[in-house]
Length: 609
Image 1: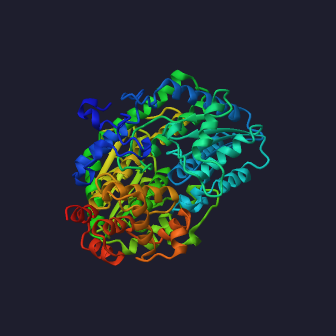
Image 2 (image 1 turned 60 degrees about the horizontal axis):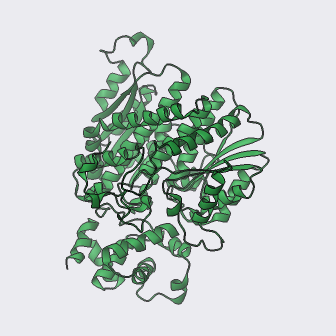
Image 3 (image 1 turned 180 degrees about the horizontal axis):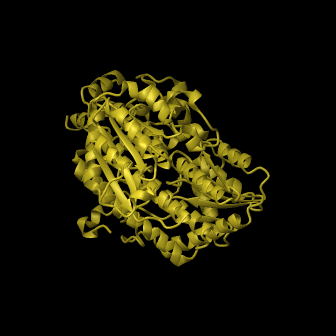
């Protein structure tokens, strides 16, 4: 656990007086206040400390926040797991739907497809489905505009559940803010003869988004409050532990994403193994705390990867994740999140998976025809990317020693001919994956392992106990995914920080791609300019449309319409801030930004002027 005494009372985020107007998921974390000035080693330690906040029982400070281990949260998990177990035992006409936007939707996809594969292997009926706002394109690229459409969410859910007599719906909205998910939860509550709705998020209900949604009569808070009332009779459930502010303010891909994965796996695994008791659920949750400790025991090597990836981005190079199995999916998810979070270019960080869409198993199948961003197989990497790889690029392989090490070695040798910056994140399961003739001889490397050791510049190896049964091996695979997620989140976040894309611990260069992010941008401008919300809103509009004289049509457009235009723009928020501080034109603001590679330097040049 974190040392509470390391922070003053004023610096404790759980105090009611700390950034009182912001929900937990949008607060800044006092532990990372100077993250943009941190060296890679300090940066990884800060991420480690923030991630450890996931594993709490009750928070002090007087706000009464319930942590992951709190009795009320664990008991709600038990109730929902029993609902899942009932469907697994009696699957005919029944369905479990996991749904979310952005990272939440990607994790919904990952868990639904993974557990369906497990069920198929056990010759049981597949009973899970996923929904992601924007469809399968959103698995690989930012499609955030659909988040704002509650009617679309309800329609997607109705289509997926056609013909089903009972549906357990788990809607994931980390900040209790996505209208897409709110529309689905409302639909469920209006059809309780079929649906049991579950809301998964990380804010208290009274911090749920309460702004009106254009074209809809409800707010997310109204939906959540109705669910809270229904929870008293077990007709609906809310699982919403407080896990603390993100290391990068509002970047729910990190802690909230990791906790989403932990909670979904705990629900599904407890149900699958018929161990949905308070004691067993708590034991499983605490096992993830062990995964956290094991992962960050490699902090020195993680920091080295951060430094190398940052150097690549600083030189105008790229970072490529090349993964096997679901570790390839983890790489693809991490890469897809960098564009909206850091205002990165689509090619800055890319992910690739062995066997491409066959391994992905997504609903819409092969999407390579949609463009280069959707070419995700190793064959695509070899044909389209590898010929252009340069020494300034970094390539990170992710695999386990149970994977095809000959294939790993063959591809690694090809990459090594293009760049020496070739690294690996490898997971070993005791003796698992070692050919029989080599078992019992841990002091010797197998030929494949010896080849692997020689080809990579560095290998971050995490060794796990060998699982004794196939199903236990499946659980270990899920946990290895989480460890890899923590490593890659550190790599991509740290690399962009080193490139200068973060101001203190704020996403200053975020893509303003939906109404939630538009509001977040206005709040950032207020915070760092000291100007009123109306002026900040106006500056943002001018930056979005690249004009000092917005037309009436521009000024009166909806936030969703602004976001659609902003999606094609770069450095919208930094430009608006420069305009506010310097009282200058859009053109002058962009010129000032061009003079500084690091956003903080540009920002502080006007803050001190």
